[in-house]
Amino acid sequence: MKPQELSRRQSKYTARSVPQGERVATSAMIASLDAEGRDTIAAPFGHALVDIAKTREDIVGLTADLSKYTDLHVFANAYPDRFYQMGMAEAVMISAAAGLAREGFTPFATTYAVFASRRAYDFIIMAIAEENLPVKIVCALPGLTTGYGPSHQATEDMAIMRGMPNLTIIDPCDAVEIDQATRAIADTPGPVYMRLLRGQVPNVLGEYGYQFKLGRAQVLRDGCDVLFVSSGLMTMRTLDAARALQKDGVDCAVLHVPTIKPLDTETIIAEASKGGRLVVTAENHSVTGGLGEAVAATLMRAGVHVPFRQIGLPDAFLDAGALPTLHDQYGISVSAVAAAVKSWL
Image 1: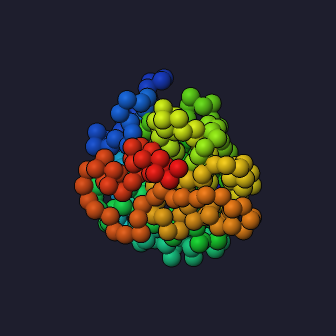
Image 2: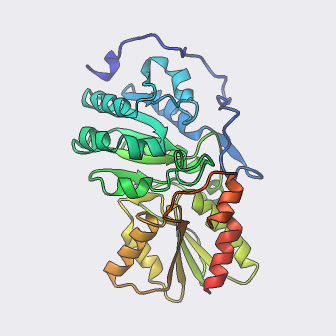
Image 3: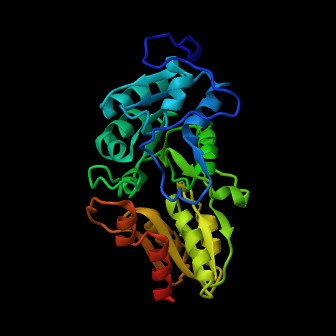
């Protein structure tokens, strides 16, 4: 079966046109972190996928009962005949995505990060990664982006996924990068795991003229005292912390690392080798098995010996509660990041 031969089938979604310039609304329940006081963009992943699908009939979307909560409902509304609602069955969704990929489609499969990394791992590795199929697994609620407790907090997803051969791993910072990364991974051979901020997502990187490059880290600001090496949500936090620390006379650089695998070791080594700076990794993930340990191993193998610290979530099951409180408690708020850096200098 060819992509253009995709048969029509019944769906609760019906195609509808959207006036020029208008964006489909997202669930009122959903608000991304750090949105207050910032410009935001609604559902950047869903809208980017719709735009890609206009010229690519191979693009299809699947979800495990979470279309509204991964912004895939935007795609479902635009292309109901290319959307598959698989129910609460992540393993089935992954297996179906693998089958569609074998038939020439490029499936985007969405769920929460905990469900992809914990429940569906074996199916991803055996049905998708081993055969190097072009399935894109896009997952909401990465790290500590929900207060629902360990059942929904994907604090170890990158550690789990980093050990999988053939898999590209992306941890985008904001709406600008989600849009750009979605387009990039659609053209990338092989499987991809991408973390997702959903709903009203802040526009942070727009002021930097940022352009996502798969596999490349990029310096967003320079500084002579501290080098932050960060990914995802924590790049927002390190940029804000750098501005706060500047007022106290601490000059901070920020190296944004959106591609966790393959890691841009060349840029990380080059930046860390610029003498006299404390290197601080920052990630919305456990300090075990994520960006911090990947950077530390990179520097050790290269013989780069610098002062080094990690900011991340503890190797523990985290509490449930209000996110601002939890972020302060676990050291990933802006104020906590700034205070930690000052204590290390």
